[in-house]
Length: 106
Image (cartoon, rainbow, N blue to C red; front, side):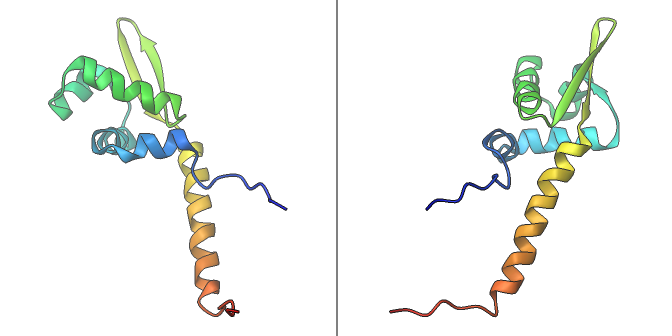
């Protein structure tokens, strides 16, 4: 019998975190809300490239964007990061307990 468990990190989040540029965007947004032009300047990337990375981060639920006049400001979604962090912390705790458990062979 297979037991279905919720994944520690869903595919969209894992994909979003796999890219160093997207991780850098998250680091920048951890300090303040930034518009796309700020991210372009900080990353030294094109506006199209930054927009594509932001789309992946939004689809993963890690970032939300809001129009402010002609600018789009972006911010992190802390609840999403906390849920992911809690899942990984639970896995680390279980692995510490597993040090004392070894399934016998044969």
